[in-house]
Length: 529
Image 1 (tube, helix red, strand yellow):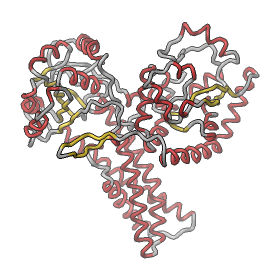
Image 2: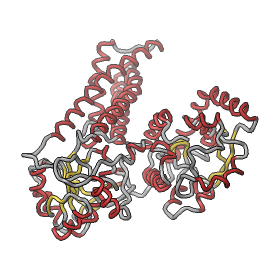
Image 3: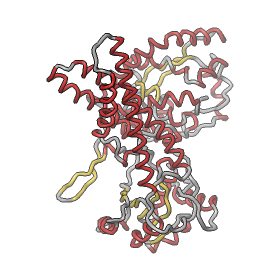
Image 4: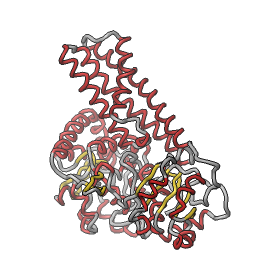
């Protein structure tokens, strides 16, 4: 744990001292939660901690920076969606013209697209401030908007026999959806870059007992891209001295929260668990914040549980947090399998010349076999033969024992940056993950999926702790959170945590996000060796 996110404004404290003090004290207690699968590369999933710094100087009044930049972000997104709607209509009209299908006059079609597409996104709540910069929420809103556009168009088209109207909507929806997803991806990248620089952030005060606040400060410090800039904490008076020793910036006790908000211009209050925040404290705090235009956030102390699985449900007048059980079977698994078959079949047809060229290159280098076959463990512990293009010397398995002392990985994984067993062709294949392409045949056969946890070796499974065995509840994947979050740069613990997050929260939207991120991860060659 390295940081309390925030900019230095005053005070003599040393960054290294305070950060290391916090790290030593709460590392054993903190298994920090990752961001919504929305941000899937390691930079987005784990973040880069900002320095832990003293409290900033008090501001003269309530700041409106958070409200200002979110409004600007939303306004820019709306304008971009208008442009996307126009471009999508132009694409649709050209397609319909090529198909010799009738369609509306271009001027009317452009006007309809410029208005209808942003309205469809708005109807799917795609412009809500709470969704700003949250990839999963943004993508779901755009997908819903495309469905809304087609469905609502189909109704009048069916009633009034307006087939050209329906055709235009159908051929507009796909490019509009792709365009708006691309716009939001670029927007998030720009936003996250600003947030890592301390701009476009929520100024947050963390409230709760000592250890719960320390844990949450650590989580937020490792996820600076989420735009939470912690200005300090409010803890019980009896724990203030100990909190300061840990490097936390104590701004007051639990009764001083409203005054702290006004003094330091905070945009949000994050309340954590513990004895200090039970009973009527949260309700009274909410009352005291009325009129302050401040967000009240409550950290339930849950890790690796995504938002869609959590719901507030009232029981006998009490608002209780309901956690849905993860689903490992049913129609979602069937649909996931259908998507795997369709996308893999199309992909194999498109890249068949590439597969042939790689096979020839591998064979010509040393005359050995083209494919490397290895037994891996899949769904429910069943073993299967995983295929890869051979990237190592033929005797690589026999030479492994001599290299174990040079293992650079933690846990049961063997990692070595400059592995002498890798061939010249193999090094190129690994750099761009081309050696993994034969696993598409595993996907077609059903032993693997396009997206899922990394397929483990039997020796790795034998060393699994109880939590790691949950990785076997879903079909292993060609790519996954581990692939787009750093691959070989990840520690064993990070790899397991990412795989468990996928197991507990997998959905079609998450799979699409990971596939999208995989393209950029492969091109960036990050963690590939």
